Length: 333
Ligand SMILES: [Mg+2]
Image 1: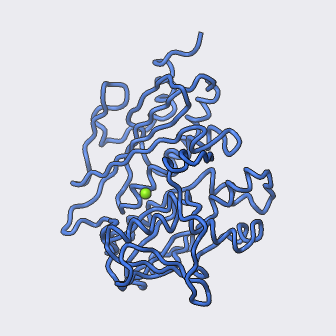
Image 2: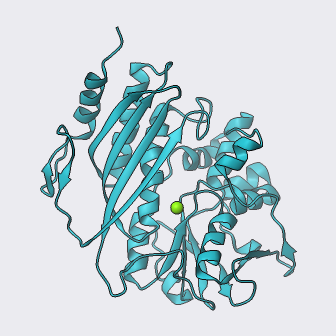
């Protein structure tokens, strides 16, 4: 007899609901969670990771998938400059998912929510045709005017564009895993793919410093920058040789491939920030680099142009991931 839905929920809550903050009025276990917000603005986001579409048993463990579903959701709160606080987790149990694998998911979620400093306040379990993990994350932010948020429509022409950490490391890791070419020097790349860390502190620091536009690198740098260009009605120009490429990505895959993955590979969960160059540079810490990679311009509003070291326009082979178009094209992870 398989474990029951209610036993599974209890199991999840035993591992994840252990710390109950004073702001939680009704903890997990009732029909709904109730909490007292610290800040006047509530910020919410939801995202689902589906086995076979977002990860496979080849590319990562179930613990990695559990880690990731928290990180990718928290990253979108970080990309608003807000503070992530609570998550609701739904586990959709596919026919071949074992109890041990559910425990691994829970272990990954538990580790990730500790690092990302968020609490599990609810969720659920369903039987499903495919295994999937869904998280809703709730955060908060201070009131303005204007509210200290990083918005896609907050950029103006004449500003600098910066990115945190490395770009292209995650998709370089995915490529090495798929080709079975993992080596000791590529460990950092595999980790970037399996265990990304959302840049919450950077997002909040940027918003507090007066930066008003940003996005996280989820689907591909050029495509993600395109959202800012379109929503802010500015042009964006990126210098190819300014991209912070991970040295292991360059040594394992070559400069050309590492650059293309940085432009379109996605899943880095680094933050792109738009603001004055001096403000952006001051956000760097000993642990996390903030690198200026381009600027906003009045020309070509809504478009992202990439330039090579000779100042020639460079057309990347891919700019980002679109799940619906990828499925239509028959592509898999
Ligand atoms: Mg995002």
